[in-house]
Image 1 (tube, one colour):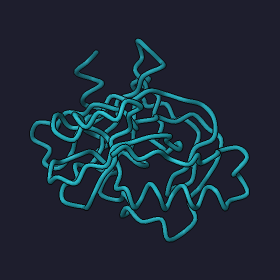
Image 2 (tube, rainbow, N blue to C red):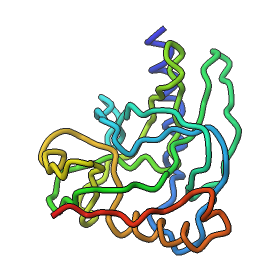
Image 3 (tube, helix red, strand yellow):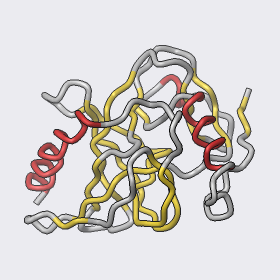
Length: 183
């Protein structure tokens, strides 16, 4: 079963070629749906797939934001449920300014874990040297800046997305709290 899941995930990595650039000049799509939340996800590079990683996210249902419109979950011929990774506002983070790689999961394809529907595996692009990036934490611990491959976003992109959310008609549904940046 794990081999089929991995094959299905790799098949859907082709859609990553069409991932949008990390800019929020246009208004994000905010809607209510089932999605993968990857803000604290640990990731691993996919062997033989340069620039791609598998990230282990949790599933949520509710309002979220992304650069692509929401879509309903889909079922593959093998019986796996597909959803996308989307953004939900964060409350606190550390800013990392080193050159370590991180994973960009926004709008990435994900498969819900058939043995645990609260989890999803997402195929995300690996990013490096795109400017300061965030590691979501409530402890102000910068260890995420130094070790492992983690799902993240640039500080600028996260701030732009929160600003767009605050000024949208969905601000009451998807509050963008004042983020705490740890020293």
